[in-house]
Length: 88
Image (cartoon, rainbow, N blue to C red; front, side, top):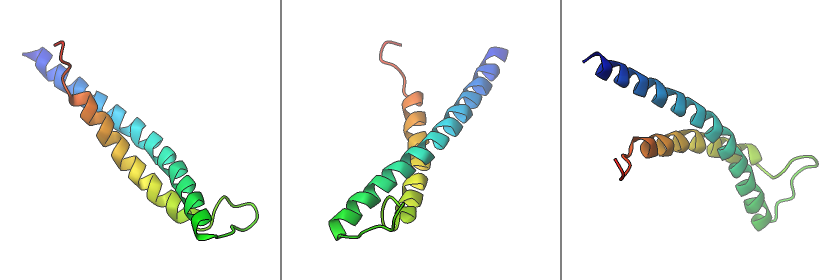
């Protein structure tokens, strides 16, 4: 009986660690993808960014991408982690 409680606690700790690490990674990777989208959208609209900046309004796209990545990557990782393997 004691092992089931420890197993549940270790699973919660594992999920917490995976969620935190993937949220961190998703935040930055989503932000980079957002800046790329800003660059593509700026080129499509014919916007010329100021000297030294990657794109016009890049901060808006970076913020949206960062939030989207910080939410979706942990959900994807934890969903995949919770699935049982077919060989078990």
